Amino acid sequence: MAEDQDAPGILAILNDIILTTTAVYTDRPESLEERLVWLHHRRALGYPVLVAECLRDGSILGFASFGDFRGGWAGFRHTVEHSVHVRADARGRGVGQTLVATLVEQARSRGKHVLVASVDAENARSLHMHEKLGFTRVAHMPQVGCKFGRWLDLVVLQLVLSDDTPC
Image (cartoon, rainbow, N blue to C red; front, side):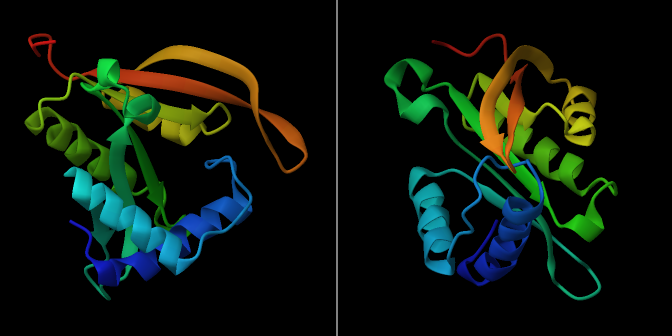
């Protein structure tokens, strides 16, 4: 689980992704203070923030978490949406897959019924990884995002965690 001292490494990954990719539909980098508020909020809700660390130097290779789906409305209380981000030089080595697989177990252990992923339609690597883990594409939303002067399509995937979760 992420600690406050992991926030700079998490922030460096996130801000690089914001500035160089369409994985996050914003173009405004975050501050360390904003990322710490996010981290503390997730912890206060009892939600995990996972980090993958390099065994060689202890640097952060990636991070993942989940949070309330659609703002936490009561009818969605059994559904969470996750995010996973991996440092550019660590992509394609299974870091993201390991983080998401761990999140799946964390969501199950908290009695969640569905885990949602929202992925940019051009992010073939992330789409493939989610499908490999059992996620199913449930929506393709054309032109819902805008970044780098172009319209972006969003693909929504979901994984039903348990068929016997009480409603």
